[in-house]
Amino acid sequence: MGETIQPGLFGDDPQAGEALAGATVEPAPVAGVRRVFWPNRTQIELHPRDLDSLLPEGHRARLVWAWVERADLSAIDASIRAVEGGSGRTAIVPEMLFALWLYATLEGGSALALARLTQAHDAYRWICGGVSVNYHTLADFRSAHGEALDGLLTESVALLLAEGVVSLKRVAQDGVRVRASAGAASFRRQATLEDWLQEARTQLEALKGQVEEDPGAVNRRRQAARERAARERQERLERALARLPEIKAKQGKPREEARVSSTDPEATVMKMGDGGFRPAYNAQFTADTASQVIVGVEAASVGTDSGPRTPMREHVEGRYGKHPEEWLVDGGYATHEQIEQAAAHTAVLSPVPKARDPETDPHARKDSDSAAVAAWRERMATEEAKAIDPQRAATAECVNALARQRGLTQLRVRGRAKVRCVLLLHALAHNLMRTVALAPRLLGYGGGAPGQPVMAT
Image (tube, rainbow, N blue to C red; front, side, top):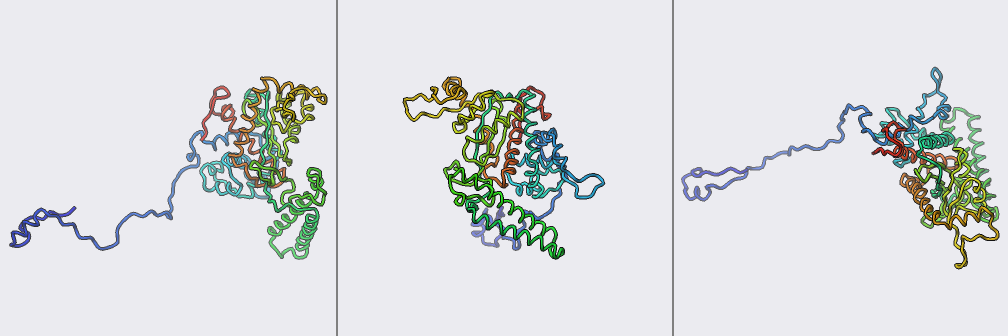
């Protein structure tokens, strides 16, 4: 604020004193560099906090760990070679790797992104508990334990069956086509594949001969990686050539004209949801309609839905020793042959295709129909079947939509066996959250009846 000027301070001139009386004068600016606070983001700060205090109670990562602690991972433990008193690098406990992938599946992400998050994200750091993990370890774990993951899916559903949450009275199946890790340009004809296979064999033999002639010429680890890459390329090309007869039969083309991907031989060009054609896999999920728990998973290499239904039904029956009473599928699944195969134990509920003649009743029995097919037509004409049919979309399509939201839009692995591991992780992550919602006491949360919800952030 300025200073007030008082009379009598300007000599003997009374008029000047009267004119300036009561006026204010601002202080002169001070020369120099201004003094302010600037943020310094390079300074090191120490925050003494334990990892357990980073996450609140009921956090999703804690729920994942509670679920993993109760899972039987003995099949994965058996693959660990490092033992007390022995040589070799100490292995990472499978529970941690499994929990990381389950949480990453719920959040969506790749192995490379997951490796970064274990250093930067509190939830992933909490799961690791100070144990360092790299990209290769995470990627290998995801695709190396298909049988163990399959057994864990059976175990997760069996626990919910015992709790009465899952009944398997009525199940719904639907597929979702997922973009494969292969480009359209990787599809080649037989002549090109044979030439590339010969080149791959020559390269592999040259790499082996290089080590035999001069073992110290190259770094051992680098040489082993080169040999592994050449060997995998040769195996992919051999599988691509072996699949040509199957593609020829499906497309009705000569063997010389059929094309197979040299990157992922088991990927098939399929029509996607946007109408385009791209290499993909047909991910099949079967879920219990009462609980939306996934009870069956399969990775199909065919674009049509008529093929995967019978294998899925057999898988579900073999897993739990129980035949679902009703099987809800879309119109593309129910062929007459499959309806007949399931008729002994399961009633198929699938829309009956419309007749070409608008005056013909599609639900009326035809002369060529078997007893099972005729019963299916009659069943689908009832009001009860029409009321049940919407449950298919409410269950199977909801499961597929959740998988899409969790990142099942682009596969980052190659080969049907590895793709199935990814689908099993999605199914296990989905069932984990259904367990949290329907039977939290299985995880040690709450003590109420099944169906009591638990909030997970």
